Image (cartoon, rainbow, N blue to C red):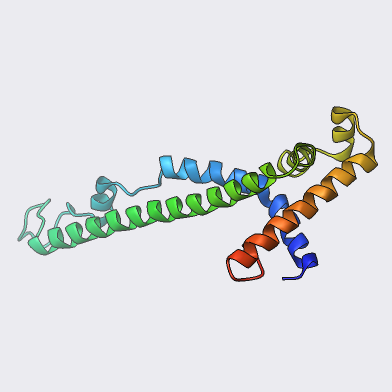
Length: 169
C-alpha cells in the first residue's frame, strides 16, 4: 500500500479511537445486562392455561405435545440468548484489540509526539486547547503531530510487510 493510503488509514484509525471507546462501554453493559426472554414469558406467550370451550378438558390442561413445544421453544430461546452473548463478546474482543493496537503503536512514538497524538485524537482536544495546555506554538504542535503520524505510517508499513500484505487492518 502506498504511503499516502497508509497515512490516510493511520488518521482514520486514530479518529475512530473515541468511538471505539464508546463501543467498549456499550458492549460491556450489554454483556453484563443481556436482554433475555424469561421462562415465564415463554409460557405466558404460549397461553398454555387457557380454558378449552368444548368442555372435554378442564381449564389449565396442558397436552404432552404442548409441553414438548414449550420445552423446545425454551431450549431454542436459551441457545439464542447464548448466541447473542457470544456475539457481544466477540465484538467486544475485536474492538478492544483495535484500541490496544492503537494505544501500543502510539506508545512507541517519541514522548512529545505521542502526547500530541493522544491529546488530539484520543482525548479530542482542539489545537487551541493544546496550545494553552502545552504552552507551544501552533507550528510546533503541527510538527510533532506530523512527525508522529510519519512514525505511525512507518509502523503500519512495517507490520504490513511482515504480515505479507501492504496494509495493516
